[in-house]
Image (cartoon, rainbow, N blue to C red; front, side, top):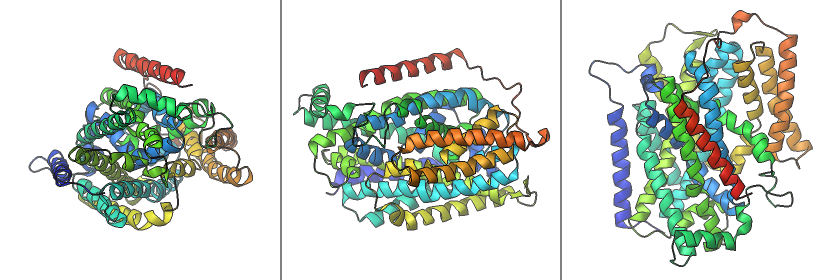
Length: 524
């Protein structure tokens, strides 16, 4: 299948327009030379709408659109828990985590670890995150993106892989985070519009032209098992989404790590002009997360009826796009590319941020004084280019053999997630936590996860994360008490930092929670 001329025009217009917009919004005033704060934190001046949109654009990419649609095809609506529970997690991040981060002028997550525990754990976690971002996250984004592009256009997947990676690099190379965040409102608008079009047309097709609502009712009648939110033990995919553990167990750990302590996500909120703006952006993102399953999971479920014999679940979304007529196909394809590019660019920028600020600019646990701001920006751009080239080269060897790449990402990042959450939660809320305790949590997280993976493979990975989390937490507390360190080591100020939120935030948070309760009650 290829694109018609009108589709190519639409996609070309998008590519040229978004590239030009990114360069325009990131321009500097005459005489001002871009410094590291400008490049990595958008001059700490992002408004709420840019923060909210950029959070979603960074998150929703090929791994969600293609990967979660594939999981919707294979598993059903239960995979939407990753989206809906993320909405609740964002509220926790906005109310309790962000006030401490912003009050302490935190720019990166490794910097927080340095201020809280010491330089060793900063370096350790900076190296870990760079490896994770390049070889798991960045590779998955461009790999799944290339599957989608190849499936829709017929373009060779290798060419699609290289093209997506290089365009994302060039898109943000000059302007940094500002180029990404300030254009993400366009990207998200296109993503939502394109996703709703795909969902609407697939449901209308199922109903035989009787409309979207009739199509949805017909889909639930034809595939009732695909609308179970809580999977029973005898479900073939119970190990991926183990029943109530999804709602009250390990998925909370995964979400807290991703939305609260993940540099390429939280970096948008750290770049806010104020705490109030950051919290407004968080709420905006939470409402958008409630909508995401309609856009990225529903087409996958519809594909079970419309294309029941796919070779791989991850082909579901590209296959549903084939229902679109010329013109609309170009618009939706542009939306898909927008999501891929926005997320890839966000990841590249965060890799550059961590490498530059947490490794290159550090010496003996302190900021180097012999490096100019211009040099820091140059190093960041170089790191960005190297990161995407590494991802392009390693994407196929790492991901080519997986049917559901989204589940692969969740499981293997879950080896480290429990330890990350323990380290940050203790660092934020327990003053007696020490670097020795934090390092213990990191070791127990990886070692315990690996041990359970091979000795007890029947344990679902979400349950495994919960088990390892509590083990790492207990041992981190014991080691911290056994090996205390001077209070002066902890330079994070929490006393006097208010977690009170305005009425507007509280009302919006209650609305999000009420919607979540209604959704789970409807599909229990």
